[in-house]
Amino acid sequence: MEKNRFYSKIIKTFDKLSSAEKKRIFMSLYDSFNYVNIIFENLEEGIIALDKTSTIKSLNKQASFLLNIPLNSVDKKIDDVIKEISFKKIFFDEKKSKKIVHDEKNSRFLEINILPIGEMGTIIGSIIKIIDITEIYEREQRLKRAEQLASLTTLAAGVAHEIKNPLGSISIYIQLIEKVLSTENTEKAHTEIKEYCDIVQEEISRLEETINSFLFSVRSIELQKADKNIKDLILSTLSFLKYEIEEKNIEVDLSFEDDDLILNIDERYIKQSIINIIQNAIDALETLAKKEINISVKKNHKYAIINIQDKGIGVSADDVGKLFEPYYTTKRNGTGLGLTNVARIIEAHNGKITVTSSPNSGTEFIIKLPLVISIQKYLISEEF
Ligand SMILES: Nc1ncnc2c1ncn2[C@@H]1O[C@H](COP(=O)(O)OP(=O)(O)OP(=O)(O)O)[C@@H](O)[C@H]1O
Ligand SMILES: [Mg+2]
Image (cartoon, rainbow, N blue to C red; front, side):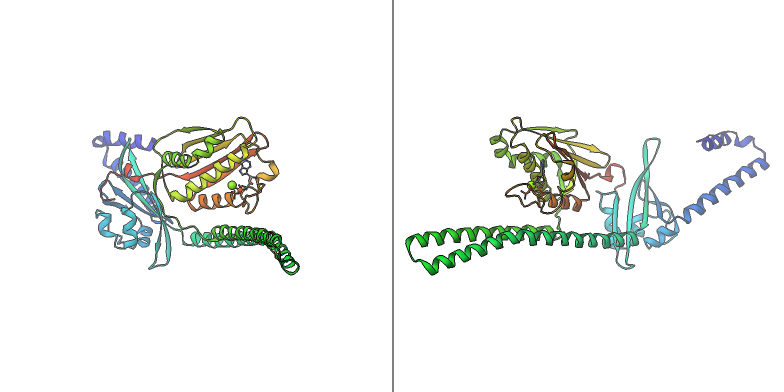
């Protein structure tokens, strides 16, 4: 700021300056320019500055190297100099300002950020920042795989435990059937055998359910994403639960800070997650006279924050940490995989889920999901 004021003063009095003074100022400017240029050229990030018409105004060596474009591309349209299809696609995808691209030819992962640049309240162009994140990206993937393997071990232990009971009961009833068959052949014996067979069938169904939910928990989630208004999504999820909510006299209090928040999500999975949380809240309110669930949606920076709160039985401080663990359940017919899958689904959407709870005062789930922020808003240029 100080410097700006200094230079504008010089511009005003420039004609009156002696040539020695002019030379001194020029040298000082030249030094500053060189200094900034050295920093610019030695940045680890590739930087490209564009004007409003997507014409390159400046680029550094690293940008030219990472995007494989000539250094002498100044005053050319970005679209004309970028030849790689995978990079080209990015510049046409308007939705995200931050993208990760796989540069197959050079086996690199690049993070590309497009940021608007403004001067006195108006957008005058944009800056493209390119970072080689190959190492970080590969390390993250390795960590993810290790985590998946660890949770698979927990899940497998859970499945073994879940399978033990129905198998034990099937074995007992088969022995009973054998006993009845070897001793009697009466009408009564037939009814008894039929009854035992039904129980065996029921236990087999329980086993099937366990296996199916186990498989869902270990398979990677394939998302089919689309843009979706969050308010519409919550309202349609609630209409799915309408009958149960009415029948159990539950009051649902809704609050939306903004009606136009858009998420890029797989609607089926997010609906399934919200249903699961609301279903748990309904269960937690079962024994209470006044049944109330509060749902609110707020915007926080680049995220939508969905709050689902009940004033139900709550969970003790010791048990709160177990809520997302596979097979943790306090319900007779619960699988204990509900919240495990909710957490996986939210994480697959690059979101976060947290919970707070205390006995007899209730439970609150906070879901944080990235919002769709169109960079079209910032960039006036039509080339993007
Ligand atoms: N809102 C809540 N209030 C109190 N306890 C809760 C709440 N939500 C979850 N819990 C506790 O966490 C446990 C695990 O929940 P989760 O949804 O994973 O499985 P579940 O509801 O028991 O079974 P399922 O979802 O298969 O029907 C529940 O059994 C319950 O003890
Ligand atoms: Mg549940």
